[in-house]
Amino acid sequence: MLLLTIQSFFSSLIPIFLFLFCHVRGVSASDYFEQLNLKPLPHLSLLASFDFRSNTTFSQFEAQSYRYFPRSLGQILQHVGTKELHLRFSLGRWDAESWGARPWDGTREGGTGVELWAWLEADTDEEADHKWLTLTNALSGLFCASLNFIDQTRTIRPAMSFRPEGDHPNSTLENTHLLHGVLPHEVVCTENLTPFLKLLPCKGKSGISSLLDGHKLFDASWQSMAIDIRPVCPPSGGECVLEIEQTIDMVLDIERSKRPRGNPIPRPPPGHDLKCNTSKPYHSGDTCFPADLLDSQDWTLDQVFGKTMKGTCPLTDPNVPPVCIQAPERRDVYTTGGVTEYKDPSGLSRCYQIPPDSEFSLVLPRMPREGENAKTDADEMVVPETPLLYAERSFTGHGQERGGVQSILTNPSPDTEVEFIYMESLPWFMRIYLHTLKTRIEGISGNNEDVIEEIYYRPALDRARGTQLELRMRIPPASTVFLTYDFEKTILRYTEYPPDANRGFDVAASVITILPSSDPNAPPARQKTSNLRTTSLLLSLPTPDFSMPYNVIIFTSTAIALAFGGLYNILVRRFVAADEGPEVDVTGIKGKIIHGVMGLLKKIKGAKGKLE
Image (cartoon, rainbow, N blue to C red):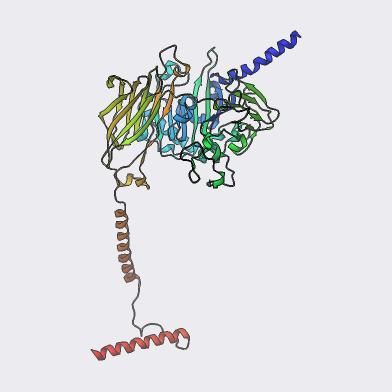
């Protein structure tokens, strides 16, 4: 009896140890592991976070003895002397007001398009620029992206915004250079996902990577693919490793994702299938306020991703559950047979151990809203966390000569101030006036000059480099800061305009780095660094009339064709009299026609002579 009690006690501890292991950040006991975290969000949305992590020792890395670390990427890093690298492919906009705080505290998020920053080992700035050019060109070919267009006009050297995430010795950091580049106009698509999957050990054939499909990923409301490479040293000592972490985060619209593949074009439902909110005072027979966003979530894993999960990757750590979902304890979740469930002691999430060779699917049924077993919203999903900061940015002004930028930064906390670094990387043709930089506070009474603590400004040079602006700011509790500045638009050469010049020019998103709080009693979310990006902007520049060059080209081509044609006829064609030409056979049809035409011409000439 005592033995059974001890066994049951240790059995109850196993789920707790497994769950804590999945959420402790550090060097994994295995060289590779992967995990998928699902989080239902309001408004019938689902956040799916894929995490793939592998490592290699530095001795193996220097000897080019790769096992789980991708060889194609390792050789590039070793060739250019990269100490740490971060690459982002992002699309869409994170709705912080509805979805709450960003996944991974925003550290795996990038601005719209492609974003890259790295620490390179170099003795001089010129050597660092050369290695940066080599790195961007190599990554451009590896990921089928336009990273080779990150030239000196799109490259900056952040002074305050980014800090290394890896464990670097102080002697190494003294000889490294941080460079950052972004392509906001880059369109992320399936050709970027394919090389991303090829870096994984199972390459999308099994495990959670088998759920990744380009049709679902790029149909999401928001998605971000991230690659982070950094050195990691265990806290207890031992050999350091070079870790690569690949993450994919996407917010799926459940109703749109459940649409079958045979019906790719969404069509409006018929009138009798509309779900209307009858509690609205303006509801009537011909007026319907949609109520589908108020219904509970009802979906399966194969419906959302279009296919079931093909077992587990045989190379992953067997002690790490491959699939987890954040759902309250009272929420019903069903899975396929043979799956072991481990619940978090907090009752807010659960993980699943999956048999290696069996397909896996997960079902969230619709919750009953009426009757004895009725459940509330708190039983359906975990309430999203409130972000540390809300940020939005837009253009102001009108006309083709000048304009302005306004950033609205809101601190939702009622009792804690937020300190952060605001960074702008602007194109060279957007010349800002630093003296117009102003801040205005709403919500408290105070001095506006206390908001900005430090400014780092690097002006642009025409066709050489862009503008870099970094501000260290502090927002009081329950306050909103309006940050504004003016700029002047530059007229480009006509050869510098893209083919779709009237569409405008993309301006990269602002990068906000929220610094850790100095208060030891602050919540855990405020004791670590977090990031967020604003949306990118579309700048309209003065555009010349491109029809004039085309008119000149057409007129010149016509004049050349006429002159060349006449000159060619004079030089090549031979003119002879009619009687000197070859004799024509008048017996055939062709000869009769020619003979008749020549006779008609003689009569016409004779008639003209008589009239004269």
